[in-house]
Amino acid sequence: MLLPSTVLPGDLILVGNEPACSFNGYQANSGGGTCYFTGTFTGTVIGSSSHSPYTPEALGPGAKLYASGTLDSATNVTTGLLITGTTTDTPFGYIDPSGPGVTSGATNTQTNIKIGD
Image 1: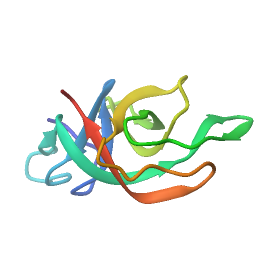
Image 2: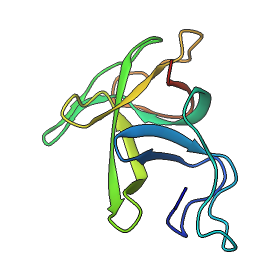
Image 3: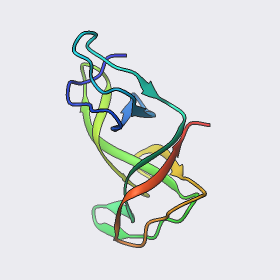
């Protein structure tokens, strides 16, 4: 699949509206790369329910997640994701039931995020 050249292995991205995790990042020889669309991946989640105004909220194991970022219109891939509990953003899986969750207003860089079925 086509990917922006900024995508690195392990990056959490949106392909269209589908949550994904880049397996090998952008590969210059193909202009794209491989992504996972199901599984549990480690990523950064911010404990909030709104961007503007910023509203802190605790997000426990099983909490639904949503993402926003920068859309690359040539590939229809969104990168640089901000993953929170903001329901007006694009759905992005949920916090794995095994945790850890995110305390209200905090940033957890080691959140287990489950995407797909």
